Length: 244
Image (cartoon, one colour):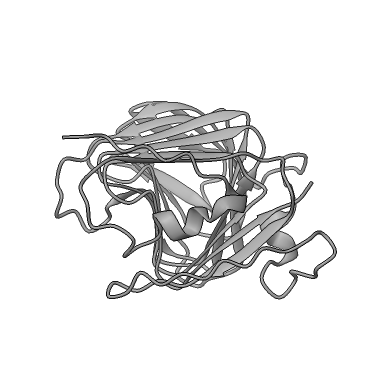
């Protein structure tokens, strides 16, 4: 099977190449977005039946507040987290048991707050399940390494919004060979998600890279995605922002 590689920067319509519907091929695809370039914002919608996309480039003096909230772009790395999550092999711990728990390879987060995540793991999945949608959930990846063969590294089943914020060099690897898997992305979200941060977040998947069933925003982030199928998939909209 041939491997197809794409090096696409946010300012060069990454959305049009990677969103759902753009390709049904089983070929591999790679996307890379650097964090320092001219300001770009886009709002791209996709459906399973059409590959239409719209990318709007903006200059730095255009107001993008109607597309991005403060929570989409602010850094929480210097703030005191509500809980510490430490990954270690096939296990994980959370410092505040009122906000989550670990069982059978799943670290479940159940309320809003800032969660500082560190360490490395195999066969551990972080699941956000905040059925009350109490507020924003910040997942701060601090030089994290996660691999999983049966479930997404990060999954959102219920939340108001999840902000996946990277710091340092982090990697998420999903090697599920079951092509019928319902949660078929290394990062999988049923609700709104934003990915931002510093350093580089690398996502590798034997299925899809990032799958969001709602609004997905990529804001000022260096993101590298290598996926066997679709690199980045957003059902409602895909919005891209980068500033100098």
